[in-house]
Length: 519
Image 1: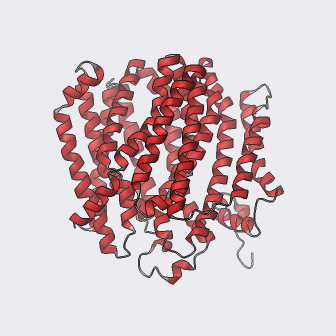
Image 2: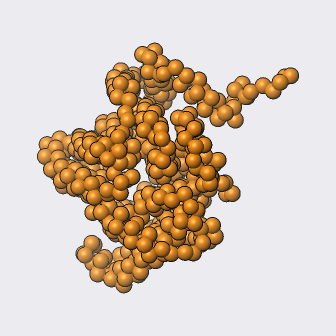
Image 3: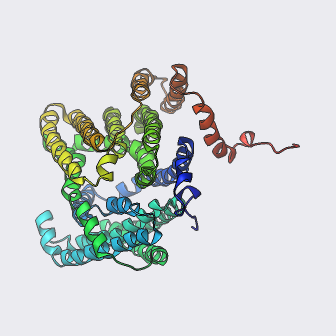
């Protein structure tokens, strides 16, 4: 784990040489690091699916209910404690080209937000019996609440460390740490649940222990490079930058989770379970594509903004990014129907109906990381708060009306409408602060083609689930071919794309390796 920032990320001499970099070099840089983050996410998701039968055997539905309540409680507390620190760290890190000032931002985040959140967590642990009584109407789960809070407190330091690795473009180190964390948690989960029959307590305990190991590794690793200096001025700036993000993130949280409560209230636990399973597949487009890209792009875009041609580069990158998401979303929407039938009991099969809607919702939602650049550059996070308040109120109203009448389909469409409205508002507001360049013609072509292709491919039926799955996936690869036939690609783009993909293919397929002179 000794990867260094790429040459593109070296701090000294950021002048004219940076301005000479083209879209191709940025795409190559983003693709390399995104693929690493994507691999980590894929491994996490694969392991989760493989171990699902194990957990359902050793944990009861009541255990899952307890886990959900603990998760939502600590997630809410985490929104308050985090104070948008990861967004603030990414933003303020690139305010200066001086490595000393950049390092000071990191250590200030550790001291100001890490130690502050630890103090609050300790206070909350002291009141854990009271908190547990309010949530569970009893105190029998107090020890579980203590473990959940302890894991949350440690996770704050890990989040700051992960953000530092992202801004330094150390994707390989971050992936190795994430995979190591996954292996530790899974190993301890199996030991505590299967061998010791500890149930939910075993899962929480494994989280705390793995977080302790990560903190003991990451803090010395990062602080050895950044030093130990604290800046009161930077802390105040970062705090007030992130402060509006607390209610903002809480409102966004409502949009993401409130539909489950409405489905349960209006339609019962069975449809709630179907919707939750469908949602779990629909969000894969975010976990496999958007999230890995965002881990590289969100800190990188601040540095790129300093370049004279950033508007053009941003526009090109958005075109490629959105096209990739439409392609990935098409594949996930098409494959899920047969995949659910292969993996799950027949009683869960209807979950596939909401997957395309949820997938499209998260494709659209991912556009925010491109559209909000003006808000973040000018540090106008209050606008994010206003937008999230509006969309949260809209989402609650839509959930009530649509779910009451259309069950889980109403929930899916409420999510799609809310996410679309939020992206439109972010675009309008942010575009007034920093001009957002969108290649609308190409964007519309890519999106419409994915929607049009979905319906005939989804109707393919051979009589065999595995064959259906393979044939549909192969049919999805007609997407880039049709884009080529309708003139989507500009001159030279395919050649540059091949130059980007060929080195990766050459690692696994000999025929793509360049022949040395004389051979």
